[in-house]
Length: 505
Image (tube, rainbow, N blue to C red):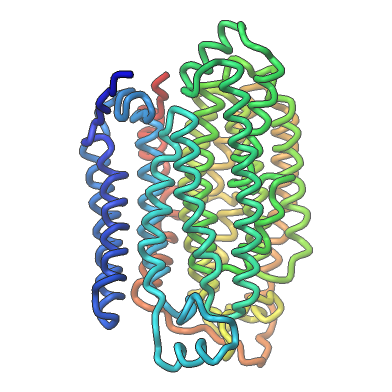
């Protein structure tokens, strides 16, 4: 058999390759750099890699090619928008991750052991989190632009494996953090197995692993429809797990609560953009013509996800678990854009993903600042009177909650209006009704937290608001400004998405 030399378009792959190079440089820093200089070196390499990757993305954004990697990677308008969103969210996340107060001194130590106490007293820092983050970002950049199922699976594992590790690095509540990492890993392994099984069935149906080949088989109708249905079902399980849609959501509350808050924000924002990017590409390109096979089930999943996330969030007494169930509800809203199967739905989904991701990073940044002597305070009852302790911080958190609720003058309102409009235009009346009612329910628990912060007296239980570091301040400020601008004047971004968001088929 003759060996075929691979043909790669390195200019178009540059955003991914730069981030991977930064991650490898981070590994070398961990291996050879003096411990005292690792933190500053890792932070510089991480920021530089992400900014350079974004610059490379902007430089080649006008180029389109199906041959970026021999048909395995599609560099199109949708890919540019999603990769840009991931990189912006990743930069904000790195600023938050740089606050080492969130992370354990020694990841491999047994919680409560003498080794861990010695590491804390020595003020050790887990700087490995920076290259792990870059590896995850590289996988996220590849995930929404992959055009064959093998590349898609590789990207899924590259983004997932670092997150499994990062979920177990919390400084405090170490057992809960390690439990979260283990749950995330085990359930993630099951979802990956389902994804692989779906690949096998789709290959059996079409004789191809490329999305274009699957699309051609669907249009031709020559394959076994049972294989097609099973393939769609199993691949959907793997993807819906990553976005936390019901009934594949069980990992979300525990992992969100147990993981370091900076990592939780990164997972909630960037992972959702990457996963929905892959979902949009598969459903809009590969199996759009098999709509009758998957749309009824997706409608049911979307409605249940919206309602379940909104209703269960009301009962939560921990702020991170509340935001976890809020994230589940938002996954349901985003599925409305997938089900719409129209250009309007595609544009609305991309805007919603970016707006939600930025607001999520800002919200979790604020959560890291409410602490007592034992660390972060998650109990919502202890957030009582936060507006009197720190009016500015409480106002920023209230603003992010209003964005999640979809209140006018926030990016959340524009996002929900766009995605519900797309659902209405596509004839998905049930999705529209369920989405509006779920948004009303969600507004209740968001406003309840705002009332708790501003209209209740503070409880003297040791809860305080720490002064944020410069990097955390940047994250919260930028997220607040973007959320406000996209709520007041979203037209430039919406127009840019409208002119750019196209798939190469």
